[in-house]
Length: 442
Ligand SMILES: *Cc1c(COP(=O)(O)O)cnc(C)c1O
Image 1 (cartoon, protein in one colour):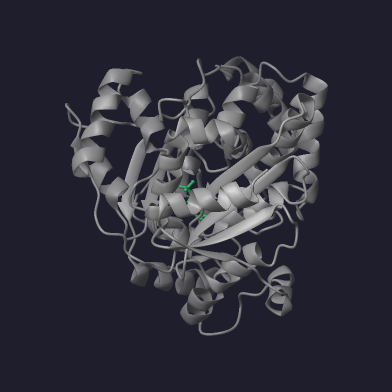
Image 2: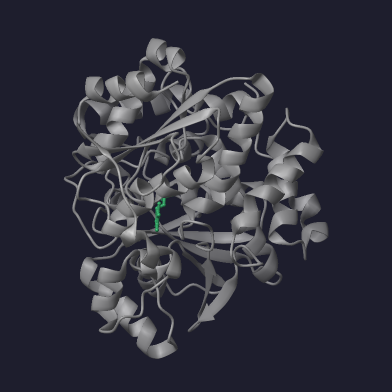
């Protein structure tokens, strides 16, 4: 399958996730890539994985994707205490998902225009994907987008970021259920291949390989900037495992990366897996980090594939066990030099926001604070980069409560409250979602 088909199809026809046929080795290029800007490096990296879009076109798509970022460096690095924070939230919706979804929107538009096709994108969001996906495709004539979110489980501002969008190709669905329900609905609808084909369904979630690809860039960028003497470790607030999987891929490509610290909130199924090799679903807990209130991480399957030496049969058995009983276990004890993992409680999240603010004046959003708290638990040598995944103003309740004053504001968000909003209420039911797509899709 070529890159363009992989982007359009989202999930493989058997319901599995796509991975590149080979992972390129960048070690011969590292010296010449030193000193490239974010956009320049993005052009080099993305091109390695794309076999069917001409270089000039791809370069233009990448340049356009990052033109909407408010910071000239796209992903600036800033020192906070003795760690380096990489701010990934300078895109239009103030979360790191813009880094990938601004590019994905450009790529979708390019492919559809060339093939003269229409796409109905179905997305499930725990809060930030929805608005970022909408911002990537709003107003595009060849796309309709349907965004499912768990009613009452995304923050008020996150909901407004989606539902105040006026473009006619944007359809928000407020689902009576959890994020895992939304993600499940999406998976099930994608498994109905006849429906998927008839309505030309596409995916904007991080199951879409292009999302992961775009996220490899900032791992490469930071590791080239800081990894001159010793490889760089990254601390990653993790929900669906998309972000940290991009880091894992960057490491396999040969960028100077040492460890990936996987930081979860109280939904600690992944942290437990890395401690024990047992992957076991529990009840979703609702925390101050809604983007990580996830039990079943959709991208985890990609990591397992490599961990099982690319054995699709073993992976299929593991995933089938898990689907059947909510529990699966590795045949051999987990051994990895790539990951460290830990779970951070709500109390620790809030106290980290407070301490970081008091000691360095830096205002961290709760997701970023989970990473900062996790980083402290491991005495790693060498440079350490904590990924800041959202602007604090997206989560003002938690941040202001932790700090005790009103420090979390952003003008883009202040203006949302006066705008009109629209959404469609639906039950967590496959037929109900399909009906909306039948009615409003093209
Ligand atoms: C989506 C999101 C995460 C989790 O990222 P994954 O790629 O799903 O692991 C963390 N923080 C914020 C703010 C997010 O929006």
